Length: 207
Image 1: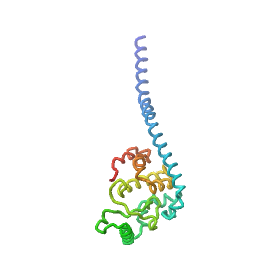
Image 2: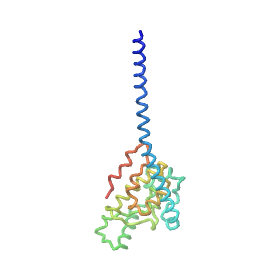
Image 3: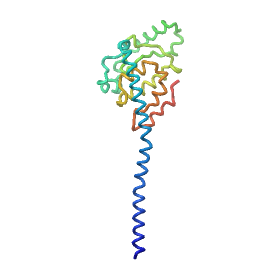
């Protein structure tokens, strides 16, 4: 009889141990993941502080590059709205005229025009002016400072802004400043807590 009671107590102990194990494992996994999330958030916060400070110092000279319709309060109805850039972009022939003018000013042969992109210093999807001459630039498509690379970074910054992880002004400062120097750091930053894999897209640098 005593042996039966002992067996029942032992079985109860085993069941209790089995039921509690997954919870301990889950808690342990969450604890291990916590420093990673904290580090990512701290990195984004530090970057936002730096870029906002830079932007505030240089805002006066950059105002002409911005679209006054796009503010921190209006991002949901403007740049974060699918297809927004297409609705405000100038006609193609007007864009080609701007590109040809820049090519001529920089002494680039027309035969080499396909190697260059008409760039906006602050892209439309980050609140840049669609048609201000001050916002236009000419960049090679490839290379460390090329348009392909900048487009990848622009898409990442837009996701950060639309996810509420970065302010519009911080994103504008990052892309209008020395973005190639900040490229690797910015591309590694995670702007979607529920999709951590998206932060690894820095493997493709677009060059």
